Image 1 (spheres, rainbow over the protein chains, first blue to last red):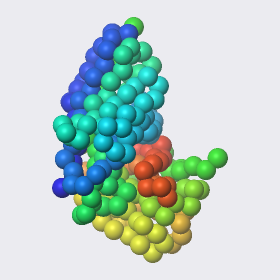
Image 2 (cartoon, rainbow over the protein chains, first blue to last red):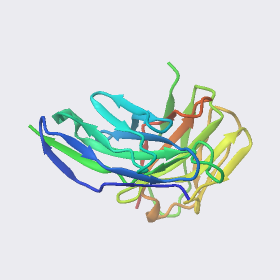
Image 3 (cartoon, rainbow over the protein chains, first blue to last red):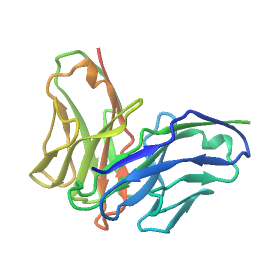
Image 4 (cartoon, chains in turn blue, green):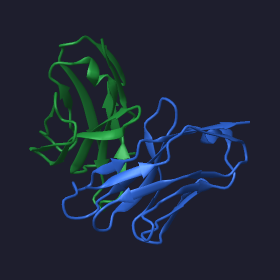
Length: 116
Length: 112
C-alpha cells in the first residue's frame, strides 16, 4: 500500500543554516506529494505540493522536487529562521488503484528547532 | 472566507463517556476526513466520507463513528471514551480539483 517515510527528528539548527528533511514514498500509480507544517498548538498548514514527476513545489523559501526515479520529495531551505521552528509532515495522496480517494498518507513528522 | 472549523478545541472527559467532536466546512466540499495525531505515528485516518449519507472506515476506526446528514458537517463520535483515545483530532476536507486538502485547527481531547 501507499506509505511515506520521513527523516525522524528532532532536527536542531542555528539560524541561517541549510535545512534538508528527507522524505521517500511508496505508491502505486502517480501520487501527489505534499509538505505540511504544524506550528506549536496549531493545525496543519499546506506548505507546498507537487502533482507530477519533476515538479518543484516552493513556498516561503522552502522547496521540494518530486523525484520519481528515487521516489523522494525532500524538503529544503537555504537559510532557516527561528520562526521556521515547527513540525513538518511529508504526505502523499492518490497513488492509484486501491488508494482511498483524497486521503493523505502521512510520515511521522520531523520536529525542527531553530536557535538564534 | 470559506473555512473549516472544529469544536470544541479542547476537551477533558472521563472514561466511558460519549463524546462528539464537531467539524463544519463552508466550501461545500463532498470529501471530508477525520484523522488523529499521536507522537511517533504522524496522522492516521479514522473515518471519511465522500458525500451525504456516505461514511467509510479508515485504518483506526475502532471506537469511533461518524455521520453525514449534510454536506457541511461530519461529526466524530467516541461511543465510550477510552484513555487510548487521548489525542489531537483533525478534520479535513478536499476540494473538487482533488489536490488540495484543508485542515481544521484541531481538537485536543484528554480522556481521564
